[in-house]
Image (cartoon, rainbow, N blue to C red):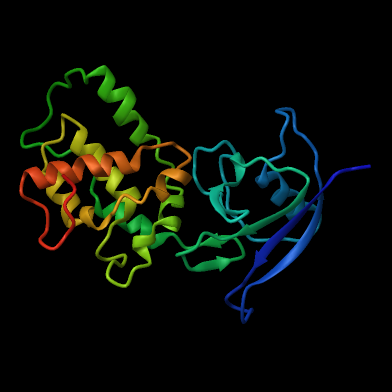
Length: 245
């Protein structure tokens, strides 16, 4: 007898629905050649064989970040999340306007990344590119470069819910990591630390929720803590914020 997944998908079309509602779908659990069945494969089985639902994806290999959503209450990439027989819930990422079903409008988070202006800034044109320290590149810069911009970290950040810390005051963990990449890059000559402070660096209280959901395993909290310490040493810490030294 075939094993079954019951996918409880939160449906919502703002143009026609008064409120979100769950719809149950039955999908046969089938292992692919890798030995698992992913959440994205479950959604494909529903969309292609039963009823069209709204969800986003592209690469299907954990690189693009477009299939991020809440799966069983946790922000994750659908293409990387293995499924087991039984009940599973699928919901859109919180903190973002719903376009349809599991598709959300991420534009305000993308705007924070664009505002970070992370092209390398130098006083004089770059003529020669010296070697970058091996450890700095592979263990820090390359890890930061692996950000999928999936916005999972934004969906769990409690500071983006606080009345005193809105999207305008706080660029969010993802954009701060983009700034950090240039701050730690020995080629960049802009004052990225002052930029980070202006972008809400000290609004972060290092709760660690972002670390738990980052599919690239970026040490977000550690890097923010380092920048907070460096900013405090330089006297950039805004008055009225907690001491992090």
